Length: 288
Image 1 (cartoon, rainbow, N blue to C red):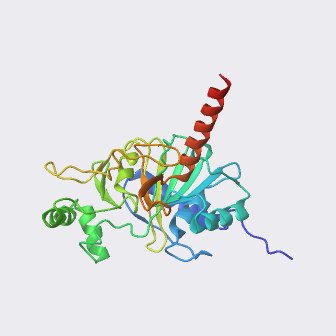
Image 2 (image 1 turned 180 degrees about the vertical axis):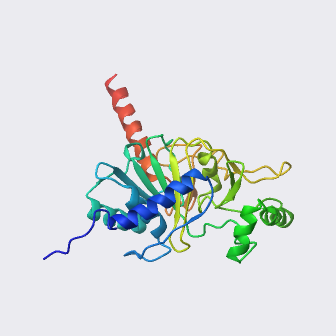
Image 3 (image 1 turned 180 degrees about the horizontal axis):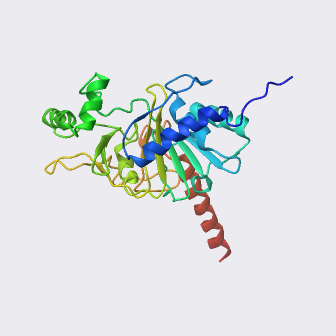
């Protein structure tokens, strides 16, 4: 006989406890709320924090999308989707605009999110001060005292050494003019998508037992000096070799036939959507 499981894997008490942590995180933007991270049927470090948030807020009528570094069909994304669907029966989608909840690792979709959507980001290291202070009680004190001199010093040292800030991803942001926050390992390109986002952004770190959030329409600024402004990855003059998209985050690849560098949309859903639109436009033109 098949064992009976709870809807969305967790018992109601566990989901309520996680939802209470989420509500506190939403009430205090950028603040890391401790929570009792549960054991999951996936290894810690593979998205357990984001998964616990998703399982605690999802309903039977919701539509779920899961991506891993822009891809809908990576191993991490596929297994998370499988677990959620098997314990909830919810509908899955690859289309960003059709999803109610989007769980993501390392990317914010190219499609502009709406106020009806929630994006859940998986976080390996939620503490933006960890690189400058290893002690947890000290990082808590620094946050409480609004003391972020260590982060500024870290960025200054990078400029002195490399001539620019060298944070390839997870560049710290200032949330609601109060807390410095780790945006998860999203590329610098995606930081601006957090600023005044219409969608609720929830961030979960299962291994570190922290939940934090960026409510809709919240001010989010990437840390930068006036004379060394924040810059993002540049793809100027490049386009996706499949759909032709520009002004988006691209992956740099090598064409094995020619040996030349080519570029491709990192967001696979966006690429397929643009290809479909391109094909429809070509069909309409042929009938005109």
